[in-house]
Image (cartoon, rainbow, N blue to C red; front, side, top):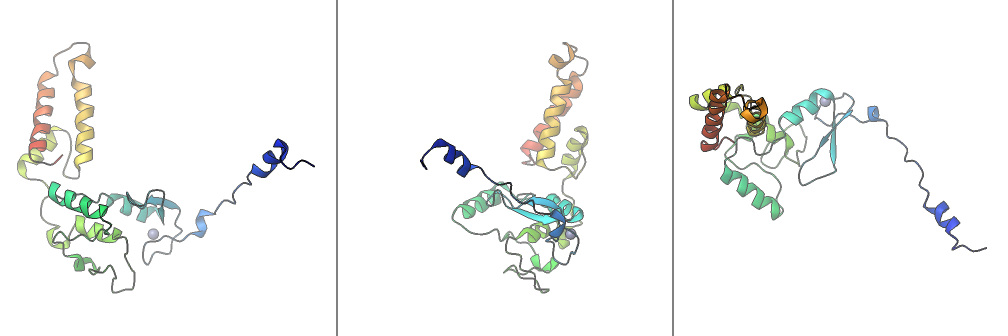
Length: 201
Ligand SMILES: [Zn+2]
C-alpha cells in the first residue's frame, strides 16, 4: 500500500470541527461579577487576538474606558509608547490618584483582585475622583464642539469622524455646486481648526 498516495494526504489533513465553547459557561471577568461572560472584549494593542469575557454591562464599561490615551498629552502618549516598546506594562504614572478607586500601585486591590493588565486602573485614570468635577473642555472648545453638533462627551475620534462627515455633507461638490451652505461649512472648518490648535484632536 502506498502511504504517499495523495489520497492519504487528503484524509490526514482533513480537520475535525472544533467543539464549540458554550459562552454561557464563562463567567464575567469583572471582579465580583457573577453574570455569564457572553461578550468578548479585546485585551488591547499588545495582546492582539486575546479577549476578556464580560457580561453586557461590564463589556460596555470596559469599552467606554478602553482608550488608553484619553486625556493624555502628546508627550504622555509618546512616553507611554516608548515605554511599551521596551516592555513595560501600563502603570499609569501620570499623577493619578489610583488609590481613589482602591487599586494600588502594584495592581493589587484590597479585595484581592490582581489588576495585572491595568485595565481597571485605566478607568480611574480617565475619571479620577478628585477631578471628576473639572470640565473636560474649556469654553472656547465647548463652543467649537457645539458648532460641530457635539457635546463634552466627544473624544478626539468622535470629533474627527464628525468633522469628516460634515465637510462631506456641506461641501458644494456634494450639493451639485450649491454654495448656500458654505457659511456653515466655514464655521465647521473654523471650529475644527480651533480644536486642532488646542491639541484636542
Ligand atoms: Zn459583569
